[in-house]
Length: 185
Image (cartoon, rainbow, N blue to C red; front, top):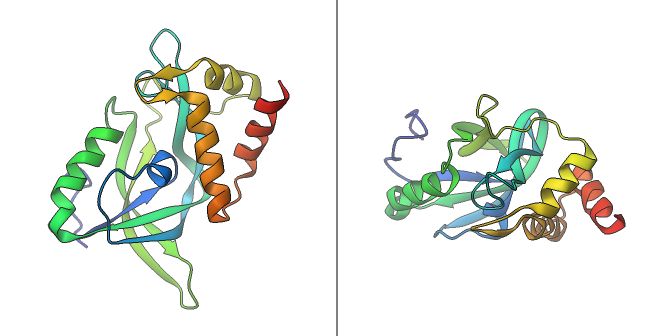
């Protein structure tokens, strides 16, 4: 793997870490899909969505990788033949409003022998005006319920992510609590 900056087009095959909609809507070709763990970040509803799951006047909220903890998700291996096109496609999808910072992150693969892969990951940019930080339950529920944008309803996005994590056997207690509260209120 090259040490090139994440914005540069990879010169060959690369790994991509997914923790939200990229897990259940990978609209790109890949050669391998594996569950992986990323240390130093956690999945959080911490990004106000002004495009895909909301609008500037009625924002939704989407997941970001925020500092601290660890998160389970998926790594996709993108083959060399597709690397440039997939990199451009994913950058366009994730960097619409520059609310994320693309980074190369070491993702742990489950196996009998400890192994990791460097993967392109998109972490929350705390300096971006869409960064919402740690939201209380009431604020998160309001944004989830009101958000609707180019990608559809924010509620569907949150429920799809929760459902897909469950199918993979990945527990996310914070997300499970939000989903329970969505059903209760």
